[in-house]
Image 1 (cartoon, rainbow, N blue to C red):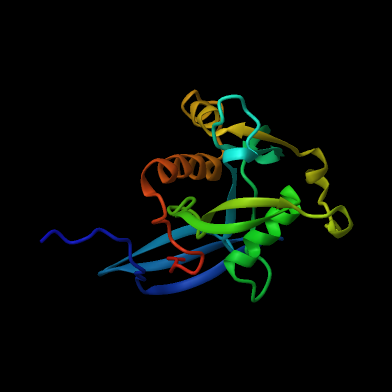
Image 2: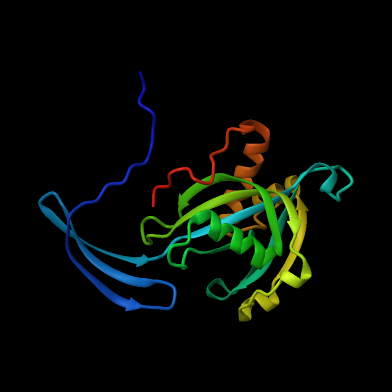
Length: 214
């Protein structure tokens, strides 16, 4: 019988660990790692992790003439790459004691001003495993309802004032990925996973409490 492939948590001995620089969100680390009889130096970003959400509306809720499922995309300026990117809602796991689903609900409320009646896990991934510890869980949020105006008391960060939102038919978003018009990794991963989920996975997606390698 062929063994099921699965990543697993593994840790080689760390001879020395030093925080080279500490920022507001992440830190830069230098560690000396023992590989058998050899010791190698590894520089990497220590990151708290994050969640991302694909907000999905289906059936009678959609507004496109073809009746295709629609996803909500956010256009946001990203200074390190000097570009305005189409993304899905996302946020850091930077609140002590907050579980991942609660964090996802918070980000959906803050960025989309909506709540979801049904949550699934689409996919988990390490954003840059060769240079960062960041792990990211992407949720699928369905049965969306707007948050009443009187409850919208969220504090917006400076960059969020320039964000715009658009509901896009899922096939159009998938085409944009393969045309090279969407570059944000969470959006690429989340949208492609949503396409597969709707076509093949049915109700077999993982629950929000599913284990996560992070």
